[in-house]
Amino acid sequence: GCAAAVLAVAAGLGAHVVADGPVEVAGLRVDALSAFMLVVIGAVAMVAAIAAPAHVAAEVDAGRLAPSTARRQSVLVHAFLAATALAVLAADLGVLWVAVEATTIVTAFLVGQGRTRGAVEAAWKYVVICSTGIALALLGLVLLNHAAAHAPLGTGGHGLDWAGLVTAAPGLDPGVTRIAVVLLVLGFGAKAGLAPLHAWLPDAHSQAPAPVSALMSGVLLAVSFSAILRVKVIADAALGPGFVRALLLGAALVSLAVAASLLLAQRDYKRMLAYSSIEHMGLLALGAGIGGAAATAAVLLHVLGHGLVKSVAFVGAGRIAQLTGTSRIDRVRGLVATQPGLAAATGLAVLALLGLPPFSLFASEFAIVRAGLAGGDGSSAGWAVVVALGLVVVIGAAMLRHTGRMLLGPAPDGPGAAAAPRRLPRSTAVALAAGLLAAAVLGVTAGPLAELITHAARTLTGAP
Image (cartoon, rainbow, N blue to C red):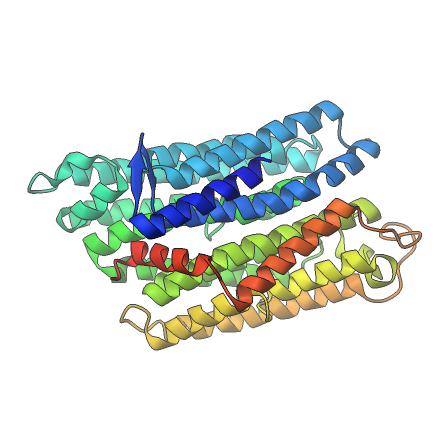
């Protein structure tokens, strides 16, 4: 119900913004980017919400989850959605920071709710690394506020209001702003899963319940990256596009290299999907670093497509873990024979993550590459695109190899074996099919979202 309400509100706000422009009320500002990010939150939450009841029921029946814990999980998930919605709607960067920090607190309890040693360690690692990152972002905001307060011609009265900072940006002190931007990109990049503060992500995603992993990968990372996009607008106006471009291209290539190196010998399929999330955050950073309206629009399309497909992948992985009792790749075999529906959805999700048509990730990745080779906002990033493509090929080969071993061949005895083919719960099947279908449709046409994406890209680039 909550996810459907977010989607409905997002649709209404998106139509209003496209027709009449941004609206600001009670400290909230709805522009095209805010409305689009609400669409992302609602769409990914719908997939997770549809699949969650069957997943939770199976965990309760197996004795791995107490009914009281299940109820607490539902409350925490709703709090998480509220915090992410506040983050994308906040007119003030300080409020955005508070909302992003609130997601850390809420999801830490969700990551550690299994109370196993691995879950508790993952939760603490998540809290320590993300709190370090968000502390860096806070320091960056303090410096940015200082620069704004000392801007000339009375432009410093906006505090941390984003629209006011964009207006005042040309008058900000370059030295202070440069330090602030580095801290903000590092801080929000930690929550977005960008290197070098990415180490929390594989542990947290592999230990959280499958629907929660779907929300963290599809919503939390996307919302955190949208904060970087907001900062980039200010930085480009204050420092020129070259400074943030260098930061983002560097983060993109390091993130892709980390994902490629650790996926080659990966032994856990949940962690495999987590490293895939780092890869896709790297691709978003690549597109944002390239800049320009075309690359920025592709980044936004990629955000939605990745959220839909990765939520399907995590829901499928959660079901595989429930059936086989393991998350080890080498202990799962023959899913095509024993679980054909689940195997088909998981296989298609992995192919979509690798950027195969007709899924939207193909269209968005192609657009990012084309913009990079063409020059983006006027400065060629072709060298970075070529390096990124090489790393993406390595990542794709590793994921195909691992997934193929799980789906094909005879099922093993012991852990990983399924006694007989079992039908997917109807709600799980609907969630998997809906997510894949939406991603495929987006790959063919963005439909009514096309105009909203175009307006959001203009908001982020200042294009007419």
